[in-house]
Length: 99
Image 1 (cartoon, one colour):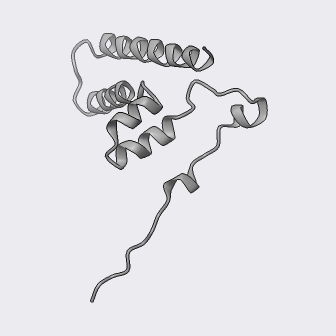
Image 2: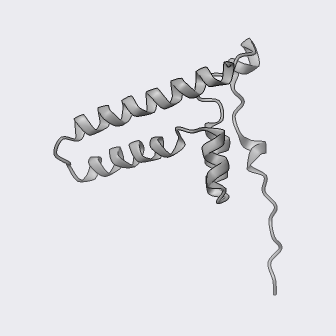
């Protein structure tokens, strides 16, 4: 007996950007949800084009998670460096949206 396939559209369950909704201007985080959705669907290049900082954010949060269980020497310096890299990528992408 075959089970019926459930059709699921994740885009119907995404949170709207309140900044864009109320002020008409995208926020620096616009695109991150869709980018994660694209990664889950295996479309890695489109995920990068949607939100360029997605992979460095995954590395950052992965490192923070690993550091939570296994204390890593110089973790604070690594986290600050990853935060700075993410800030530069997010800020650059945000400025490019307006150019």
